[in-house]
Image (cartoon, rainbow, N blue to C red; front, side):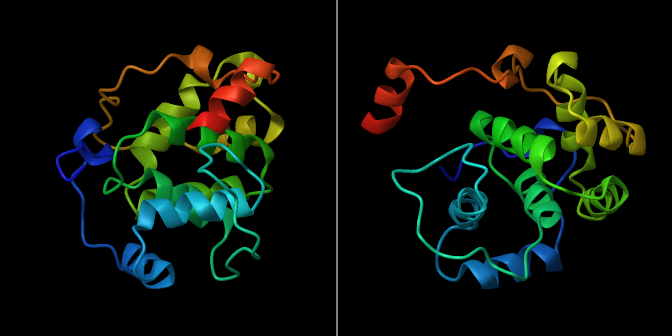
Length: 171
């Protein structure tokens, strides 16, 4: 998937040299960074884009939830619609200081995708942490949206059904 589009190409925000991303890659070791980030989210109980199994280990203490969200939304990341729902779940549930998250997102150029995603969330799904983050952020400089069609209805929480559990187990 070397030719897969990145969030940077969709948001007109080119990837940059990031010491933060390099530090994360050192923490991930030889594994692909995106796989390790998903595993970290699953270990923390967010369970958005789940692989075949959730490892039984403690979360990495050097990584905060805010850093994890920023890493998933950086311009370097490959586009995957499942990540959007995972990030929204994290934003709805995790105890994150909105100003700190917005500062880190701006520093790592994840602010455009974060702003786009926050405005996609329907009013019925906006929890108090999400509303606080929406009030803490402003449109990023040069923001022109993200060129990715993603229905906000996919961000709604739906109760699990027998069919959805069966499909998840087959993957």
